[in-house]
Length: 110
Length: 110
Image (cartoon, rainbow over all chains, first blue to last red; front, side):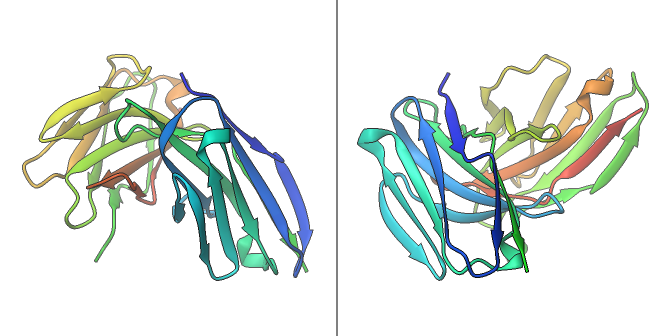
């Protein structure tokens, strides 16, 4: 099956700092989503981004499908950004089945 | 719009028992997928239901079964519970490529 690797596995930032999270995948995909999992377990949709660049407030994401990676940028981080960030992909030919990476655990401190 | 709702939120069962988890999809969504998330890992795909039939299945034993009702809601059943079935069970709904998740059911098997 498709492999999804996320880096770094853990990240500690001071409030106000910027960060870049990376997701590499091993096969062609027709869907890529970024999620933020809060401490209660809820997966919050951040971006649906199979290709290109999107921005939503302090967050932006870029997927380069031909090179099989995606980046999530967090600017001016806040303590509420803490949690685990997951990248999930849908390999071509596996409709609506998401394969998740192992996540990046982000802690934002004051 | 209530989003994806799951019940119950928490559950404790004894090894060998059976459990049923429930999911109501987001309004307008006709596809429901179930995922298992062990502690410290990313969610793993269990199976997906569309038009009341199982459309795809991940690498889970037959002890895991499901159902989708005409109103698109879904149940996940697990028989002969093992200690290793303790996890967060997430339901996702979709009507296109983007999946939306519920808050999950945290199952503890003792």
